[in-house]
Amino acid sequence: MKWKRGRMTVAAAVVTAGFAAALAGCGGDARRGSPPFLAFACEQEQRFFAAFAGPDTAHLVTGDGIHTLVRIEAASGARYAGGADTLWTKGQEVLLIRGGRALRGCAPSGRQRVLADLWRDGALFTAAGNEPYWALTAWPDSLVLVLDLGATRLRHALAPDTPWTGAGTGWSDAAAGIAVSTEPGPCLDTMSGAPSPWQVTVRWQEREFRGCGLALGPRF
Image (cartoon, rainbow, N blue to C red):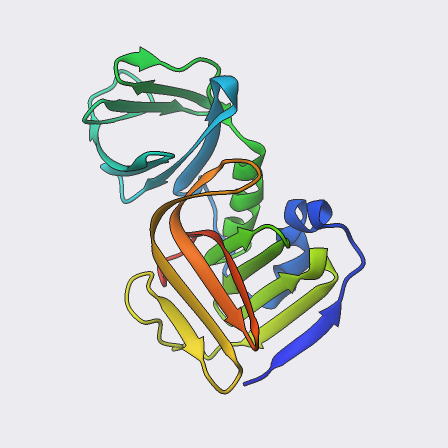
C-alpha cells in the first residue's frame, strides 16, 4: 500500500472548517442523529470536550484531566455527575458545574460543528497539530494526512480488516513509512486550548508531527 499525493490550494483555516466536505469521497458510513460527543466552551473561552460512552457514562476532558461521569436522574435532558463535576445537556443548552460553581455561557463550539460533520460522513478518528499545521483523519478505507498548511494531501488505502494495536494505541505500516501512535491525555491544542483525550504522534517518512486526537468511531 502506498501514499497517493495530491495538491490543494486552500488555506489551513478553510481546510479545517471544510474537512468533511473535502474528504467525503474517501469512504465512510453516513450516521444519523446526534454524535456521541460534545465540544463546548464556557466563560473566558474555557474549552471542554465530552465523549458519551453509551447512555449512562460520559468522559469529560478538561485541561486538568479526564473525568468519568455517570448519568443521574434529571427532569429533562441528560445529566451526568462524578466527583466535583456535573454536566447537563438539553438540545443546544449546556450547563457545567465544576467545584460547586456553575460556569456561565456554555454552548457548543465551532469545533463541535467540524467534528459532527466528520462523524456524519463516517470518519473514525481525527487528529491535528500546529507549527506547522497538520491534520490526520482515519476513514474505514483510508488515512488522509494534510500537511504544509493544506497544500499537501496524502491518502493511504486501508484494508477493511486493518489491525490497530489495541484500543487507541496506534497503527503502523512500515512499507509505506507511516506510523500513528497515541498516548492518554488530556492534550491541549497549542493555539485554541481545546482539549482532546489523546496525545498523537504521526511519523511519515523522515517527518514527525505531534498534536492531539480523538475517536469518532468504534475501531478507535
